[in-house]
Length: 340
Image (cartoon, rainbow, N blue to C red):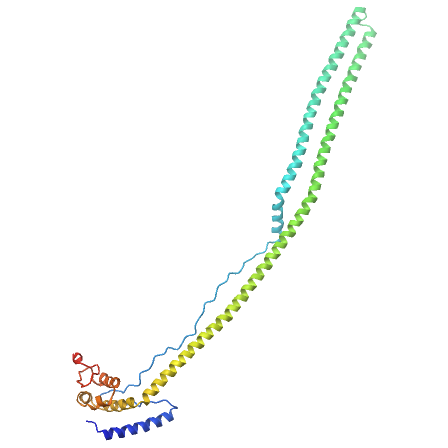
């Protein structure tokens, strides 16, 4: 049996040593390790496992920027030409068709004139052929067919034929010249129309170029403005993210420090408690014994049961009982089931 007087004396000594050790270590209580015959090293207070918080990471939104490549002046010129191509083609087609119709009509007029000249020439020749025959017949009846008069009349008839044919030809050439002049006028009208169109086209082309350049400049400015807003948003998100992460991390640190404070307080309170000091004295005693002596003491000496609460008694049973059954009078969670 344990001598209570000696136990009290040891407790007083322990309290004095613990207080002195606390003052020296700025409030930290250290349990001196004791090497025992049984090779048992007294354990320290159970540690509360607190994971040091990692800095949180907050995902920020991802924005898509506008990738804008402005058109070159050559590309704008090509686009303007393509935009006005149908307008130009339709105008040229109208002018060409108008001239082609005139040329076709005048070509037909020339054919008609040529046919009329041909028929007129035939009529003139037929008329003078008949007149020549009549002259011959008249001269023959008069018996002067071979006379100089007959010859002069025939020559006169041929001269008149030639003159009549020349008149037909002149009339024909005059009509052809008029047609050619009308063709030239039609060609000039086409060219005048094209010249006038080119002025209108140049104005439209210039307006379209200016319109496309203004659209290009606006699109480029809009893209820059949008991307600048994206940069501002990203910066604002970054500031918000860093503040939120900092707040969360500060909160986690506060929580961690609170847990550590609770843990340290729990350890200090446990190390300062009467029950722990009694437990530590008994533990030192058992640790200084041999394995068999420690087991016999736990089995047979009621002092441990009477002076320790359930937690500390079971801790000694777990450490020094070596898993062997120890019969006790109080229910400490150790029963006959532990025998084996």
